[in-house]
Length: 301
Image 1: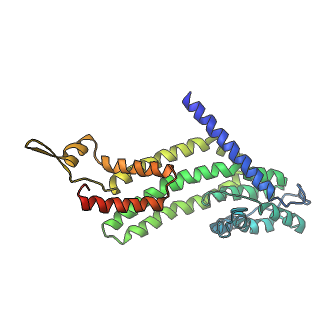
Image 2: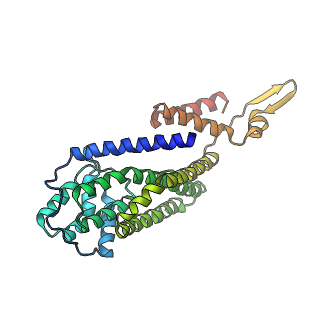
Image 3: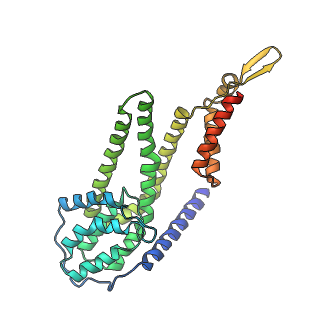
């Protein structure tokens, strides 16, 4: 019952976000007509064309702004493909205007959407249909990208790289960059080709499995973060409890027996709770530094 209610709330939140995206997109609409004048199927894009699109997607956020978000970089990503597809100058102009409308997608898996959109452009789908697909996939792609990269793969790579660096190895940052970007570029280029080849058939699959994929990636990410807390958050106390002639070290004799790394866990949860209440990370870093200095000076840390 709880799971069903949670799924319903998630669906409502996704629907509300899609509606807001639609409103912002339509607010920046400048297209003159909904159908292309030349409706003939365009020539097939080559692997080189799709790879070029994937490379150009690296500049997606180069012209980021708060009116249309990634629109400039999105059009830059698609432009060579659009020029190859639309030989009619008016169709090309209309397509470019539509792709300069509001869009906000995760920067790593956006190539799935760009490949899909080029497949629809090649088939000369209606502009309103292409726009609807863009808006419908903004949310799912954002959720998957955040869960896969920011919550899962990035902490794993950073943890391994930081561990090597703390041991004095120069390979720490190199391993971090290699591990992260091998997966990053594999996903970026793989999704570009998959999106173009699968076309609109991929939409149903993506929407069907978005929740499951994001949930699984989030679980892995939380597990990794838990391991990082135990490994890299160092917090202990030298306090000693004295009962008569008996002396018990609070850290080794009590806390560690209750649960190893209990203090780092409690401090991490405290920081997380304060962040949820709106306290900025910069203030929390300052509080941590002050607490560490005061604790060492007074003698409870």
